[in-house]
Amino acid sequence: MSPPATALDVNATEALHRLSAARATRQPCAPVRALLPAGDVDAAYAVQSAWVAGQQAAGARIVGRKIGLTNPVVQRQLGVDQPDFGVLLDTMQCRTEVPIDTARTLQPKIEAEIAFVLARDLTAAVIDAAEAAAATAYAVAALEIVDSRIAEWDIGIVDTVADNASSGLFVLGDRHVDVAGLDLPGCRMTLLAAGEVVSTGSGADCLGDPLAALAWLATTARDRGRPLRAGEIVLSGALGPMVPVTPGDSFHARISGVGEVKASFAGGPS
Image (cartoon, rainbow, N blue to C red; front, side, top):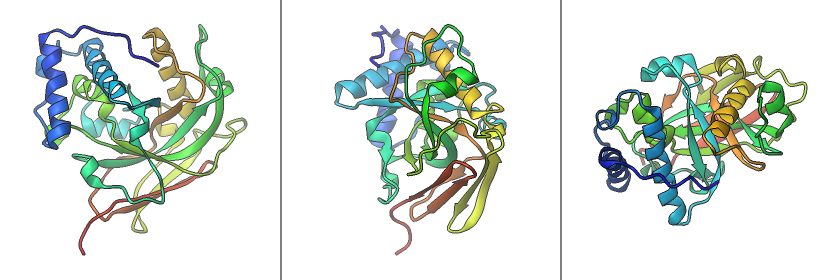
């Protein structure tokens, strides 16, 4: 997927530069929503696309998409009321057995999700949950390390969309599950930190059904001229509240019927 070339206006260019500087200096920035028309997600996606194009030019490869803000609890945590999406790059994927350096992030939080890997393109005229399931090769448990370049996570929908849907890093489990016959809304999620439960939820907390979230993304991406393609990874959205990450933390997510996934973070008290 190559984002279409988009000429940004002065304010959108300033938003891009502000977010890019926050990444480069590791200093969170002021919200960008005042730079863009109020509630204008199209303008925010243009900023996102420009950042992704810059990453591609630097050698990064697109490996999929992420859906954000699918869980009502997370929406309330962040003060937004609609889903969004961002782009996954190969540079964001982490291995479960290698501790993650928190210096790669600014204000990390973690959430457990169901990820889908696509067997074929999703470009049909009508894309519903059944069509999304038919296009899926397998589901896998995932941890997303969400991050915001906006200071103190003071974000609205325009801020998070421009900031690549507050994407950070992600980890996939090892077990690949056929979605046929799997009760995804009924899947129960438990996220543990150092053995203590810190977040719980279910597939029903992700737009009612993670496949409905996938269908929403596929339809939205198609309509924006960037359809989901075979082989892409899709993080379908949080199954429970996100949890702050600090150096030295270790997390273990269990999603019934789907599998498990772990992530640890380097550093912490010596």
